[in-house]
Length: 263
View (tube, rainbow, N blue to C red):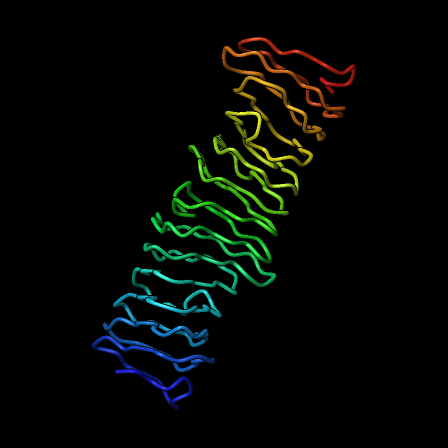
């Protein structure tokens, strides 16, 4: 049954509990039941919750004010899930809805997620610890997206924010990306499989940038790291680059279109 937003005391759920309301619901929720967010309002859950039956967002916006607020079960997001918190969120997220990272904290998504409504990073840092963490939709990054993982990340990335590659693994960006906030490679290898993969901003390469692509790469490259040209295509570097870690041409042709193109 529907519940008021500020009912007093703890709630023990052994059956589905529907929250068709707005406001801040700070009661602690436990039990084996499911929590359903319905209606078109915005509801914040801020209690230390331990329910295990999963969460369904059927309408409106559900704001998670802390990382444990959605219990331990899977989340089916068919509207908007907003995460205004820090820490590691390991619940699996599916559904047709959008995930929003807000606030100034650092949040890690570690689940193998399948939601399709896209991801909006409006504040702080969102860390993806696997390439499936952000589902299959586009990413609008207006703050910081940190990719601490390996594999092939093919979601399209737009927005004014920065993308950081961290950790010691090799990650490939294969989307046609338009983000403008620049790219930081702080660890491992970042592979760009097309010349648009790193958006339009400057690249700070403090590890390894591998360009497995053809065409004209115009972004400026700085930092202490190495640039590698791989694959059999012809790539032109036309930026005024200052990177100091050297250049390796392991395949194809690398054209320097500027006297400073190779750092």
